[in-house]
Image (tube, rainbow, N blue to C red):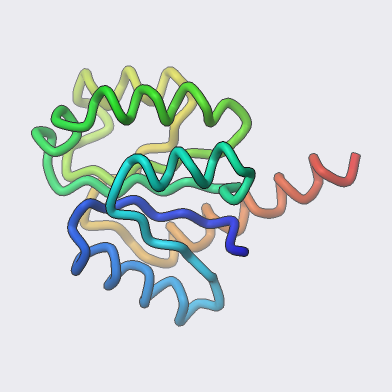
Length: 128
């Protein structure tokens, strides 16, 4: 069971990101449907969630699903990959809610480092 869940509704892009992460010894699960993410969260199969969006309209189209996901991920780190600046009002709101925003194009090593950081934090919290 993998604890790293990648959401990208575009199968090709999501698979490409997952392949790059696998080359760095991570074991991501790629989901193309919001329902799949919700199921993984409900059953405790997600410790870190990466939401990969190609455009603001794609984010807006999934707002309802995203809100439902974010309601469930209180203790799960969420990294949002966005083509928009973290200075955009929508992104600022998400940042204030505690989500980490990475602007595209992403630097893969920074994403991997952030995932490792959250993995270590989750292990430390579980060992307390």
